[in-house]
Image (tube, rainbow, N blue to C red):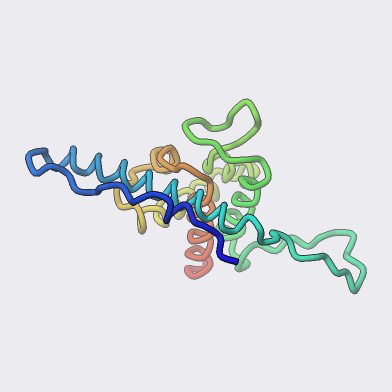
Length: 173
């Protein structure tokens, strides 16, 4: 059974701009067109994967430990902090353009600071590494909040946390 995709339902937006406009305007138009295409692709992905179960069936063959052992990703302090902050974003919800919203959703920096439990130096190091990871893919990003405010969904934010944690682990931070 073939499921129709949203991507095939409508043609992609025209990415060509008139030649008589300046570079900045062309960049803004291209960014808007790409944002629309990414949003359309995200919806298509959700529609096309809606039938796939998200959680495998749980089979317990041995008793679970009463006290879970928290192991930071890779065993390094910053990687562990970034991993826990990512989990908090998933648990509490993600927001942009504010540290938190009325529903309790939080921004990436707040997630890092909450999981750092007052260790400002560790939180600052994690934020620097997260921004470095973001800037590898989004060279225009000047700050985490400015980049976060441009995201349409939480998916790229979570991916940035994963990449930053991997970078911290690779560097032994």
